[in-house]
Image 1 (cartoon, rainbow, N blue to C red):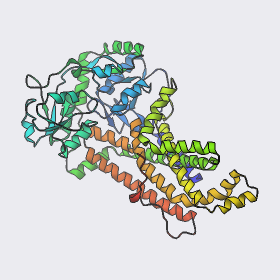
Image 2 (spheres, helix red, strand yellow):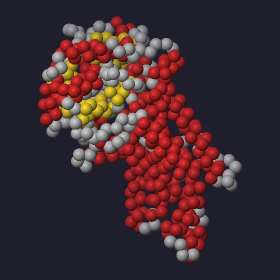
Image 3 (cartoon, one colour):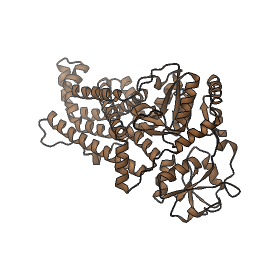
Image 4 (cartoon, rainbow, N blue to C red):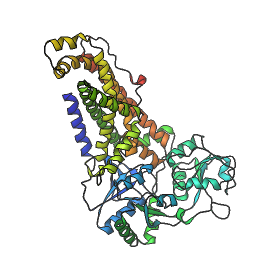
Length: 515
């Protein structure tokens, strides 16, 4: 255990050495965005003169970032950017995790019911159309009537879904969560096309030579409402002072500057040409620092949470000797084994702000990572409690009676006689739990923990090369779990000299699925 703590400490030093810390300064302007919606915002792996550092040692760049910088400068505040999933933006704003949303978000009627919007910060040259395969007959379509029987999708949670109703005779399919996912789905042949704004659609076509963006405007194109062609800053309804400050600051950014900034963002080149392996190597080369940091954070959370979860499980096992403590333990185990860890992450992360007024995870050093460790630790403790219980039950009950006859208390019996044997019995299951946690940390992307999956998703959303990016991610996970399995089998044999062959589960047969 001491060695494990030393490893965790060393990893924390490594991670803290490459991450930014929000000091909770009241003069900060905390902005939430995806950092994966080019050209509005995207993720970069190294610092430049114009990008902004975000959690996990990565950097965010794009039109939204430059507007955020201008606004922060005018308001005299320090800019802090939080990388969040699209579906978590409004909830993060409502719970006070961020001050504003600047993420290419249009002020739709539904969103106005939840949050306030500033005056538009970009309204020029926005149209809408459909991204299709360049080799498809659909590539010759020029109107909304040219997609009959085609399988067309749109991004969930956007007004693009409403535009599907204007395409004549299409087959509506399941809508998808982001443009990167829709891009790879289209390339795989599962979709015939998806709705996009002209800025994003042209960027996707620029990055993927096999795709084409068809602008559908004019008399035979989409009927567009005013709110669709503008993007605004989202601010919490009760924060009227900040709304006034943002509107005043936006008034100081000329339209000509807005157009120039968007043009500058559009000129960024994300295209990576070549065959599959050349693209994979290019993505790896350009983002190796991000992959390394994501891997370190994944390992840090997995090791920390498994160690803490193990201590929780020991505590539950030792104290589970009365009706009251046994009932509490049963409730704890039932709740955390009976609900998905992804849901637990959402409830704990956002629930803390709901129940404790003024609390922000982002105000804590490495707040998201701390939240992630808490979630995985509690979940792991629930599973390991039952694992240790089974280890205790495997010990002859006569040992309890012998200890009692010798005057041992419950605590002394458990800590000096029973648990040392029980732990030895459950070592293979403990190792398996660590392997599972390495993979399960990916669910923490819903609360913006910059672990390996979250980092990979940002890279895929920026390059629109999801299949190639997640091929790299899969290899990293496989290497991690394989190395850990070998190490755990070695530890098992060292701790139990009576064994000649380790019984830790190989990674391929891990079956403890938590979500």
